[in-house]
Length: 320
Image (cartoon, rainbow, N blue to C red; front, top):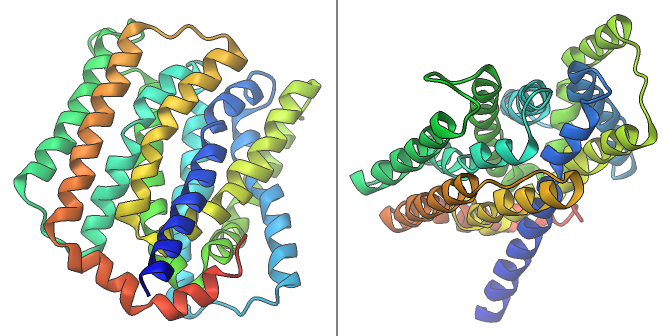
């Protein structure tokens, strides 16, 4: 029994790590794409392309339709990860660097944890909120002294903060829903739920500014469609469902560091010492936040996973 439990945890960690690796290139790829393509097209066009892949996957696997309650929850997931995060990061990165965005997005794990706590009905101790508030303060301090803002937050920074809030909601709700539907089916159904919004907005973007770009921009757009918006979620949601949002969510702490690395390697962006210091400071705060949450009421979130384990394993197994 112990060996089986260890294997489940190891599988969850591996799946979560693969998801984070895929997501870590999202900001650099978005930065490349929006230099030549309309940001609205980048945000919603990739969702439409991923929805085509999702429809094929659901048809090939003969996935059963979600229940009415699951449809409502899928709407929340779609609003967060299909529409909100891609749109606001695309708008932000038209004028901001991917490395700057990576520092701000360091808040995403804490945001995901907070929303997961609220959804699960836990009552964390004051230390949890102090750690989360310290992380937010570190990011806001960086934004204030980075030279890109002068006394107030810039519009790209506000876009990034909105993206974080919506993405955290989509991660928390999607991770919980994946225990019922499986990681692959959760993102696939969410992509289809969003089609009434993503298709008209994509067509509007094409009509106002027909997409014309070079091979590099199209390669970045393809990556965002196939990996960031589709396959990475297979692994990420499967990991959250198998190992729990609190435990597997900690793997996401590596994402900003990986993004900073990709931004420097692929885009040649300069990493200011203040950016590295801010990222490390927030990572410490996020670690404290998630550890506090895990230790607060371990039975709350973990009990849900144990209680639904047979059903979750059955559906999650349909993923990669």
